[in-house]
Image (tube, rainbow, N blue to C red; front, top):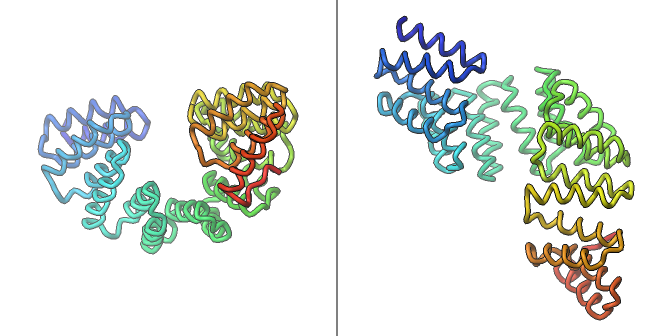
Length: 345
C-alpha cells in the first residue's frame, strides 16, 4: 500500500474510534514517507485521542520541523499544550495557526476556548465573534459565546445565542443544557426544567446535564425527583464533588441528616479541602445533636478558609448550643465583620 492509502485507512479507523489501529496504519505511512508533515500531524492527533499529550506534542513538533507552515500541526500542538496544562503556550500556538489560516473558523473557536480557560472572558467573546463572522452557522462558536455570556451573568444575552444554535440544530443537547442554565440563573425554573428535559432526551449519558436538572428540581422544591437526577449523574460520573454536595442538600431538605453526612463524606473523598462540605457536615452534626463532632467539622472549615463568614456563624451557633455564650456572640460578630450582609436565614 502507498502512504496515501495507509493514511486513508488510518483515517477510517480514527473515525471509528479505533485509535490504536489508526496509529499502526499511520506509522506505516510515515515509514514510507518520513518527510510527510501531514502524516506526522495526524499521528499527533491520534496520540492525543489515546491520552498521550506529551508524545503528541513531540510529534506535532516533528511535523512543524518538516513544514513550519502546517496550520493543522500548529492547531494540534496547541491542543496538546492545553491538555498538559500549558494554557499560555497553547494560546500562542493557536495564534500561529490563525496567522497561517486566518479564515479558519474552527481555529477561532478553539482560541475562544483557550482564552476562556485563562479567564480572559472578553477576549474569548471576541474570538467566538470572529468565528461567527467567518461562519454565522458555526454552532460551536454560537454555543461557546452563549456559554461565556452565561458565566458572565449575561443570561438574557446567552439565550439569544442558544436559540440561534437550536435554529440550526434543534437536537443540540449542549444548547438545551446552556439554555436551561440561563433560565435557572434568571429564576425561571419551570422553563429551565423544560430545557433540561430536552437536553437529557438528546444526550441521556451526560452527567453534567443530569446534575443541572437535579439542581433545578431542588429549586422547584422537588427533592425526591432531584435525588433521582443526582443519582443518574453520579452513576455516569461518580467523581464530581459538587453533585455529591447537591445530593446532600436534597437529603437535608427531607430531613435525612445521616444520609447528608454520607454524601458529604463522598464529596470530601474527592475534594478534601472543600470548605462548604465541611460546613455542611457541621450543620448536619448539629441537627443530629452531635455538637462536639459539629465543632470539629467547623474548625476544619475555618482552617481551610479563615475568611468564610458562614463558617463563623455556624461556629457561633454550635458554641451557643454548648452554652458558651460569650464566645458564641464573638464568632457571630466575626462573621458580620467579614460580610456585614451575611445571614444564615
